Image (spheres, rainbow, N blue to C red):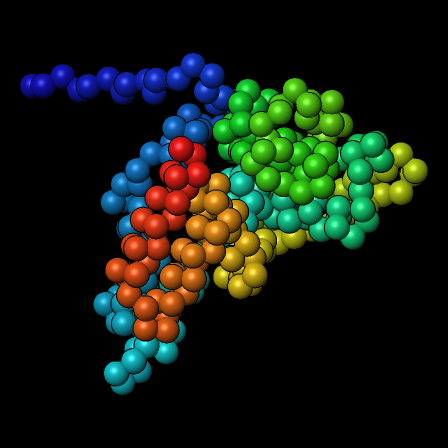
Length: 269
């Protein structure tokens, strides 16, 4: 009889941060980072509610010759450069900054409360900018320090460290009831003036319950495309994308991408 194969231990790359916060050691091994990222097995399908496995459900929304609803519209549009589980927290601190004009120098202490799955992947002490995207403390600190959360603000972890020491992250079991539809988070900031400010977000912007608006979607496209193709190239590509809904062709979009890449290459040369 063949001998059962031993389970191979996942290889940890140099600099990888698998420290998942204060609850890390309490988590079953299969629920740590490796399990979170591994391909899902077919057994998951068997845990799907029975009504979702009925053939009629596959054509739900079809009326006569057209669709009355489109599942693609229920997709999640990420507006933060962080793990989606942290977006309730990220929205909450962003709203406080916008409403109260908070500066990092004003902050005495911060308490972050979130739901269980967010705590399971929380990187309590990130060692690089990738790990920082999975860190409630780092993302909140970056937003407070720079006035908004973007990926550049997560690159200087040494600069974030003093502010991160003022941030406590904990699990609020009451927030678990909102998952998976919601990605809830609550942020409470105590200012040096003595004021205490709190904001809670259950459904972050970009979820089906709080869809990203047209301006937010276009701003993200401009930012990401602009890094590779420059501002003019980004606008050309976006125009070609929007034209697809007005009779434009994929060939025209491809031409816009090639032209933008060529123009950028000429600028560099």
